[in-house]
Amino acid sequence: MRRAIFPGSFDPLTNGHLDVISRSAPLFDEMIVAVLNNAEKHPMFTVEERCEMIRDVLPSVETNGCKLFVESFTGLTAEFARRSGATAIVRGIRAVSDYEYELRMALMNRRLEPEIETVFLMAGEEYSYVSSTLMKQVFELGGRVEGLIPEIVEARMREKLGTQDD
Ligand code: PNS
Image (cartoon, rainbow, N blue to C red; front, side, top):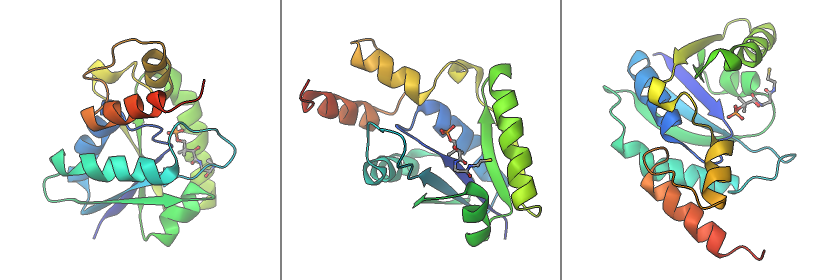
């Protein structure tokens, strides 16, 4: 049984994340999309909303038999991976600029949990510039983000903006 986690903030899920999930899932029997519940940040979506949106979208992902789960976690990713019985942490690399941060995280996670390997996948080039932060910024300023985030997520972002006070 090969189980992996795919950790992240997912605020919100983008098509870049989905691309990494669909590329990596066939390598494993089970994969947990692990949503960080980070109290320090001020997310657009609550961790429950993020998990719900991911659960709504995942059935459309082709996984070649890999079972996908969505869970939130607090604390260390490496510890969550161990507790979950995972042997791999999946991360996507979009461009060289991601490498340094990802390398530091992978080395630290390996120090914390030497049995767990980080597996890097290159995101599809069409998503090389797509990040949750950029998507929120462009959307909030009225720019078009179709094709870069799932439709469900876009609808939820529209609702969110509509209900904002400012
Ligand atoms: O989607 P992101 O924001 O790039 O994901 C970053 C994430 C959640 C993987 C990273 O911030 C993380 O692992 N946070 C949990 C706390 C932790 O384990 N920190 C040490 C990492 S070496």
